[in-house]
Structures are given as structure tokens and as C-alpha cells.
Image (cartoon, rainbow, N blue to C red; front, side):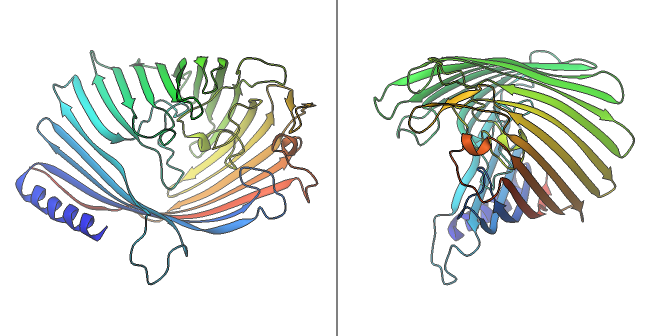
Length: 409
């Protein structure tokens, strides 16, 4: 790692004095977590706590028809490496891409990169996770007319089965902006290789996302996606997601939110896979911060209805928010471990709140707290004889993100 960072430093100095615009940023993000029922309802032995840390160095370069970005990172848990440590495997490259600017309307971006589209429901950087998400992708970008974008991306992962979440992936994204309205259309073809047979099965996602300003104080956004094709087990897919969110600016400091999201699910007697999969989205952003749904779990399951509301306060360097979710399953029955059908009622109520203080331009402090008052969520998660159906998580984060230097010619 020292050799790589030394090389970056020498390269940065060379570019700084010889070429165009260079930006070098650092990011340190230690986070303490107390997890009493995180991702699944609490049972004996599930309690954990500790500190994780993201350490990143971001380098960006621009000159003439060329853009480059390199992001190296070290992700670790405090105490998991000896104090007299020689080396470890926590270091990785998060982004490494180059972009050719053929004109002001056409470019080609190649390499390891984050994919962020719309509200990040289908494609997102998962910035909440310390490691984040990035893809090895070739991306064509076209801006044919003002306020219109067209992207075509594709990925080919040949060497190892199930290392990447897909073997082949292609997508088309169209985005158009108007005075008080913007919308996008996304088509994704996702090829997943079966570890059992070696065959690649393709599932498709087609849908739209929109934002509109109903007035100076009221904004509306929503999405609709439909999935079809085949899943990794070669079952037919027929699934959908739709969502509507409203934001009301009550005053200069207060904002109220209300919304509903539906993600279809598969019932005990369904022969098709009716479970919507948000695939590569930033799932922590949706359906509660305690991550019971779609954050590494709840795939090919009974789906979800999420009725939610929130309130946000902002003043100067301080912000706070309170959010509530009422969860019910889409499919009302599921199979237990013995293959017998079980009826499901509502899953529970989750309350999340945060406090954030921006101490300076480069330093911020954040406190997050989540409570889940579960009902049939324990059945869904396969738990029984629980000491309590109440669960909570706490995170305390300190975020350092200074610009080390920025130069240009």
C-alpha cells in the first residue's frame, strides 16, 4: 500500500506542474455501531458493537479531451488487525476509470466506476456502506440536445462465477428535464450465471422515474418498474415496484415527507418469481435504516408495502429528522422450513431519527438511531421464542473530507 500511495503522490506532483487540472481529496469516516437486531429481529447472541472505518484517497484529473479518476480505499474494523502488523488485505481500488470526451455531446467512460441513476433505487453507489459499490463498465454518454441525456452501459465478467453479481449486464438510460418536471426511462438486461448448471439466465427491468414541482413548496416524485425474463433458477419473472413520495416545505426550516412504496412478492402457491429485486440500488436509503429489507436480504421473498412519513429540520450547520415506516408483506403467505404454508400479518413499525452537525467545511458529526417494533417479522426471518420483539440500532459517525489540493492550467 505504501508503494502505491507513494506512486500516487509522485504522479500527482508531476501532473500538478506539467499538465492540466488535478484534484486530490482525502476521506476518513470512522463509525461506531451498536446493533441490537440489525437486519434481523434480535435473538440471543445477535448483539454486536464496534467501530468500522473508511479511509479513501480520491484523485481526479482533467485535460483537454481526457478525464481520469482513481479512488483507493482501506476498509477495516478497529481491532481486527494486530498492532505490529506487516500487511493485510483491507486495501482496494474503489474507482479507476478514464473518459474520452469526443465532443461536448459524446463521451466514452471505461473502467471501475460508480453507477448512480435517479433516486438510486436500481443503480446506486451504496455510500452508506463503508466499502460502497462500483462496477467494471464501459459507458457511452450522449447529450443530443439541451437538458437531455442518453447512456448505454455494458459489463462483461468472464473469469469467475458469482464474484460479480452478474456475468453480463447492459442498460439504457434516458433522462429529460423540463421547467417543472423531469423523468427518466431505464432498461436493464441482467445476465446471472447459475453455479449449478453454468448457464446464464437473463432478467430484464424496465421502468421510469419522475420528479415534479407542483408549487414552490410542494414536490412530488415517483417510479414504476416491471421485471420479467428468467431468474438464476430459470423461473419466469413477473414482478413490479411502484412508489410515490411527496415533500412539503412547511417553513424555511421544516420539511414534511409522506410516501408509499410497493414491491411485489412471491406467495406460497406461486409458480413464477413475483419478487421484485432492486438489484444494484442504494437499498439502505429505502424501507428503514435498520435494513430488514433488500440490504443483503429479503430477495425472492414475500415483497413489501412501506407506508412512510417523516419530518426534517434544518438551520445553519444543524439538521435533524424523524421518519416512520409501517410494513406489511405483499404476499400474505409463505412456506416454512418444512414446506408448510404460513399466513403473515403486518410486519411491524420502524422509527428512525438522526442529528447531524457540520462542524466545518471538512468535518461533520452524525448520530443515527433506529427502533423496530416487530410483529410477524420474526416469522418472516425464521425466528421463534424471542426475548423481545423490540429492536434498536445506533450509529455515531465522524466524517472528514478535506480537499488536499486543487490545481489547474
